[in-house]
Image (cartoon, rainbow, N blue to C red):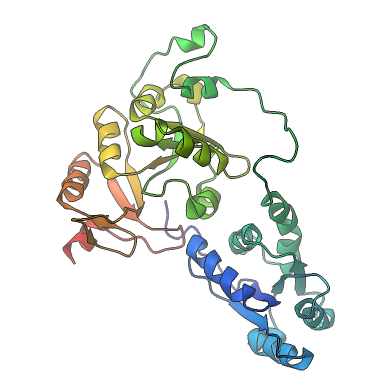
Length: 338
């Protein structure tokens, strides 16, 4: 992945996150944990001992030079509340370049961060966020029975025990060359979580996320939870390593945009040794345990990990160390020398 992917040109829309109490500070921190540190984002909190004039002063300070120039989007907690009312007074004076959206939740904020790189108008971003915020609200168990999509040939191919009808397409002729479009291969001890489901999914836009792990594939609870964590519009499969080896050049996956998630470099090495050709692997996190040393705040290694990474490098695999797409890319071997 190109480290410059999320670097736009020119001025971005400025965000003002506003709330009753310190909710705004907390959701800003949560958003940056998932999407990375953001510029041109200010927080306004309205505390119990403050009045409307205090709130207006906070907004004025947060806006800075944007009071007079530039696009501004207010992301506010509650329609009709004091933060909304104060923001409305400001927006009414600059309706051509300021907008407000209420009902702030984390999916909305993360989507907003990504939207700034493709949208230049505050109002355009605000309108685009409504569906995302609504789709981020789900329940377990589901409130209503939904109609499941008909399984595709690729779905059948992903079954650990093949269940597809006995048609000619199931007589796979392995070519040794990938048929699926591998958009990202990532080592992440947490596998599918917020940073992957939002920031990375937005960056690489996969049709399918494949979690590759013998351990998780045989753990029904973890497997179910990972499938349920699928981003909107993306299917998730959890498969053992051998299943990836079996299907990575399967014609039923021709052109399928895919993200591969591995727990450990050892799992990547096993897949590569069995014939899966990967040219680049992103390292997001490798969890700490006894005997491992931290090389970044998210990556811990021992001698076995280092040896595995070196063997993969010898086979032509390059590594890109980044938690989120907006992070600068780092060299794992340079980090290991520090």
